[in-house]
Image 1 (cartoon, rainbow, N blue to C red):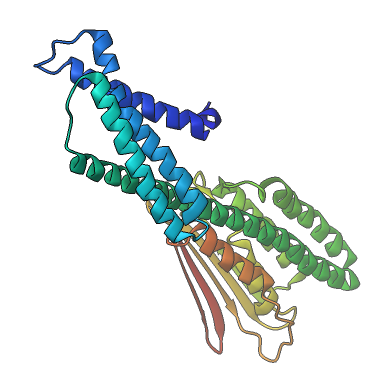
Image 2 (cartoon, rainbow, N blue to C red):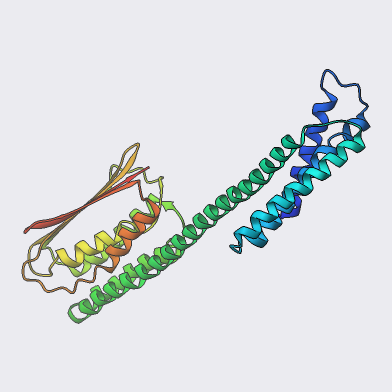
Length: 328
C-alpha cells in the first residue's frame, strides 16, 4: 500500500482531488452560497484547470530546459506558459459568464504559481536527497559494524589458540581444559554476536568463561580479581563491548612467572553501566601490539553509541586502566 502511494501519479492525483474538493466545500458552506451541490462541484474547475496546466507545463519546462542549463530558453518558455494560462483562465471565465480579475492580476497570479510549483519541486528534491543520504549513511554504518564484528571473532580466536598451543607444550591436561572453556566462549560468539542486543547476564557469562580460560594458563603469581556483584544482569546491551578490553589486559598485563594483576569491575546504576579494567605493566616484555580488537571496539562505540558512552584509557609505568561508561 505504501509503495503504491509513493508513485508520482498517485500522490499527485490525491493532491489535486483534495484541492478540488476543498474549494468546492468552501463554496458550498459559505454564507452567501445559493448554488446547488452540482454547481459547487463545477465552479472550482474554472480556477483549478488553468493552475493544473500552469503547474505541469512549468515542471516540463524546468526538466527540459532549466536542468539542461538552457536558461534563456527556460525564461522564454515561462513567459509563454504564463501567457497561455492567462488566456485559458480568461476564456474559462467568459464561458462561466463572470468577469474575473484584471489581466495584470492574472499574470501576477500565474507567475506566482510558476514560482511556487518550481520551489515546491526543489523542496521535495531536497527532502528526498536528505532521506537518501541518511539511508546511505545508515547502510554504510551497518556494513561497517558487520565488518568490525567479523574481525573481532578471528582476532580473539587467533590470540586464544596461541595461548592454548603454548599451554599444551607445558601442561597438556590444562591445555585440554582450556579447549573446553574456549568452546563455551566460541558458542557465545556464534549465538549472540549477531544479535543487536543481548542480556547483560550473557555478556557477564562470556567474561567469566574467558577469565577462567586465561587463569588456566597463569600461575598463582597473578592476582586476578573480578567484581560483578552490583549488576542488574537483566539489562539489554550491545554485545562484545567488554571482552576486547579484558583480552587486552590479560595479553599485555600478565606473565606466567612474574607477579602481575588484572582487576575487573562491572556495575550498573539507574542511568549507566560502569566497566573498569586495570592491569599491571610487565617490564621488558615483548608483545606484538596490533590493537585490532581495541580499534574495532572504539569504532563500534562511535557508531552505535556516539553520544552515550565515555571511554578513558590511562597508563603509567606500573599499570594500565580502562574505564568505560555506557549511558542507558
